[in-house]
Image (tube, rainbow, N blue to C red):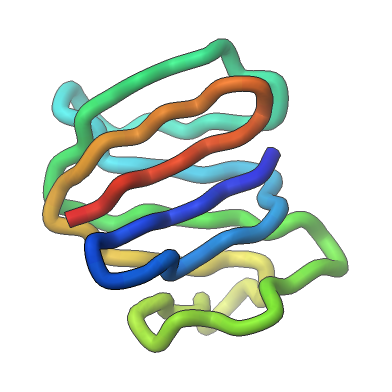
Length: 95
């Protein structure tokens, strides 16, 4: 699945991912490839990104944190936002 994280200032992440976990208003949830289409509001919390094995984004924005234990895991803090997933493309519009 392809993931983009967009803020008012810039696109902070765009790459193929295996999974993404987000802080939804009704609790945290995860999406994998071929997930049903969804639109959800997001709350303050951490977006957890699992990269596809053997790949890495060309450049990581300075606000994205790498996991100390797993090279495939990335984290991004948000204050809220909106998520849309359709046709294996997820877009997070983050505050």
